[in-house]
Image (cartoon, rainbow, N blue to C red; front, side):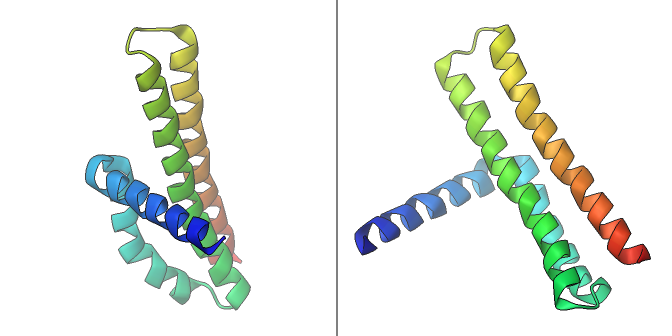
Length: 113
């Protein structure tokens, strides 16, 4: 079990490294954390507010990672145009968009409230 944990951690770090090297949207989202993490501690007045603000930010990174995985898988299957391949990529991109909308909604609600 411990061996599995270390292997899984190694694969996760490899995935994060790959995304940091090759995925511009992920790079931009990680860079934005430099501003937004301290801002979350300033705007959030309670531990719960801070947790929700930070969780909304990390959700974007999680969804972006899944989006990249979908795109890589679709590209691996074939580069020729196929309706379902396009739909898979569009739906994954929509998930990223919705996670970004979630950030805006959460931050506005906590900032105003």
